Image (cartoon, rainbow, N blue to C red; front, top):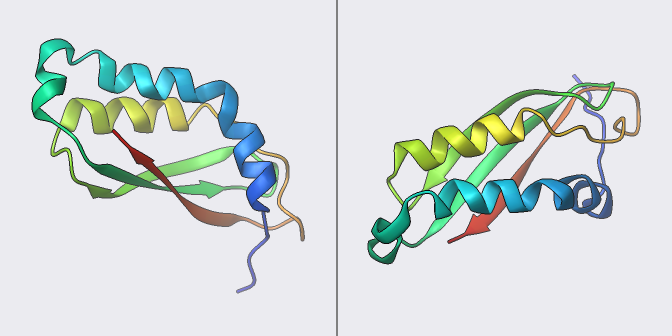
Length: 97
């Protein structure tokens, strides 16, 4: 099964307006933030239309489920340009807190 392609610039452009909301997922922890740090890697599944059909956390060094859940919720509302090839694609996106 062939997959579509989203280039890195297209991903970064689509993600940029949503990054403040994603950072807010971590900021909501308040004082508990000083005890947490690490990387979270999300896998986005993007349909041929550019809509996100699923987001998975594939690495979570924070170990904090509310942050994980919040990032997934924000991620599901992002719209990407249609992948080249008009086919579903997936990619990983890493964030460090």
